[in-house]
Image 1 (tube, rainbow, N blue to C red):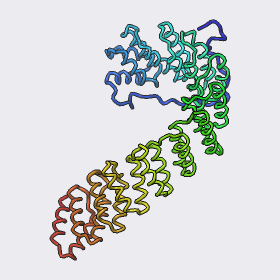
Image 2 (tube, one colour; image 1 turned 90 degrees about the horizontal axis):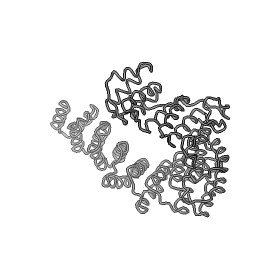
Image 3 (cartoon, rainbow, N blue to C red; image 1 turned 30 degrees about the horizontal axis):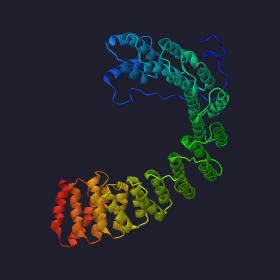
Image 4 (cartoon, rainbow, N blue to C red; image 1 turned 180 degrees about the horizontal axis):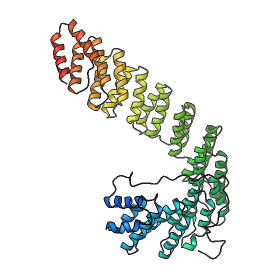
Length: 485
């Protein structure tokens, strides 16, 4: 590395303790054992690496008699992060076969797996080897940034940024944003903000820089620093209609604070004055949050802002959030209004839209409306869920409308092939009690033919009814089918 120690990366010197020291998270690495559709050769190589001591892995690889390609090496390395020493030995062994022509991606994987295991000396040895090959890239440094920050070594990540040019990599805004992203992704946004304030005299931040910081504050739910960062952004780069990710993250942070809804509405007005606006991401996330906590007033205020002020057309997902919210509060008319409105705004109801409203109508015994909606659902191939069908059969039998119950049952046996026994028996008994004995026998026979169990209790009920009607022969035939099923 460079002789100038002020500019060099001293990866062996200890760092001062972080402001809020936290132990590094135990990483969960991908494994060949849980990854589907692996080529047999790659799987065998991964097995050797994962089950062989580092001291003997090269000899075993040589004895396996396998030939490898660059893609083979890449695939093996991606699945060998849990065995860094053996993975490096494999990389070296495969190099002899490839005439030392490893792909840049393979080299970056080696750097990454060493860094993600905290083997920083070995990681830098790999980077130096890449430098000799002339293949160090921003991707290499992005990996190093990420590895250091994941081990709570933000200072080392920043020092790495400072020495990039010694490895023929430009320290530009793209590199800066890569570093900021690594820092903020690990919940250390304050370090990212402080570094940006220092570096901005040399590298001017752009909209992505601030979007990264604001996304960090969003994840950390830090309203005060989000406001501070937002104000700095406006001073540094001004108002930009294309800076939607930054506005989305900022507003998503505000909504979590005290008096969040009013704060959001205030800032949306400010954005509108500057001919800027949040995007669909913000509205979806905030409405999803309101739906989960059942906040109808907040959702309606955001809805009016989205449709009335910003002029965004809600899509099917957003309509479903509102339908779900109204359904959870039993606001049936509003839920129906949302479903009816969808078609006129170009957002068509889907499976979820219909099932939410169908469930609400059934629950509130609005059975005429439920029957009409059921027909529409089947026509549009947005099929009622099994749970909704079961509830519908029960309620239509209960209120004495067996023919609609039959219609739903027919749909069930055509489209579902399990968990039908309880509903089928309930239908047969309901038809019997409604004095529809021929229909009860018909659907009992249909159940038997389809292998759906008719219970002894149901059979006994039919026996009573058929005996009263002096149709013992019908019962005997039904019993014969039942016994032979």
